[in-house]
Image 1 (spheres, rainbow, N blue to C red):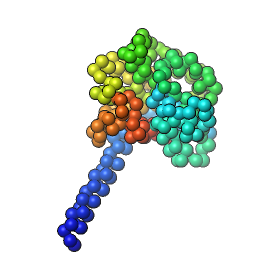
Image 2 (image 1 turned 60 degrees about the vertical axis):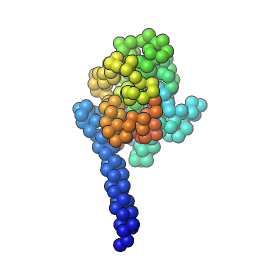
Image 3 (image 1 turned 90 degrees about the vertical axis):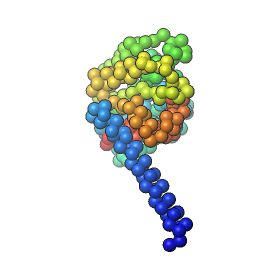
Image 4 (image 1 turned 30 degrees about the horizontal axis):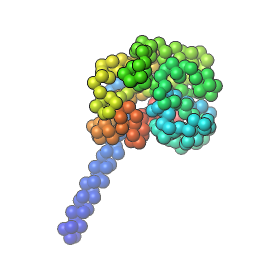
Length: 256
């Protein structure tokens, strides 16, 4: 075989092997994060379930607000919610699932509460996925918001307790607020205070026996494969790769 063909073949095989290793490493990375955080709780997706994604801009992801339909790409936005929903609807075509997104950019917990009857309870979800908290801290630095971690903890606990009273069979999936340090919006001013918000979300999940997604650990570990700016453009909002990472983590806790 000519030398140049041999070299090309070796390069191809090397690149293919490296790509395969990376493809395998991300799912393993997510599983490792769950194991390291000792998180075992999972949510079973059942036939006829109504699944609702709630939160701030990370969940909103530019969804079309005037489209209130379920299982609709424009209504689900361009983030982790639509990616997770597409996998759910593909994998469980026989379950007649309905998936909604009601995240709104900029929201803090008290703003969720103000619209909860319309944007949650009226939809009667069986599975409620909620990712909230980054603005409850971030806006204390940028928007003169005076809430504290206790405000966040009390508001979120009250909101979920009320939801459980109104919807006794609801299954919660609580996402951990996360940030990638050193990228644009996220700097030393965030720490150590922001860590308390992460801790509060986890404690609430444990007290409710809810599924919990350790997003911070997942993003931390993902940076072993690619730098932080690959996963989030500003330290908070995920890139396309970051959204897929989040969706994969979400699907780790939601099983049919």
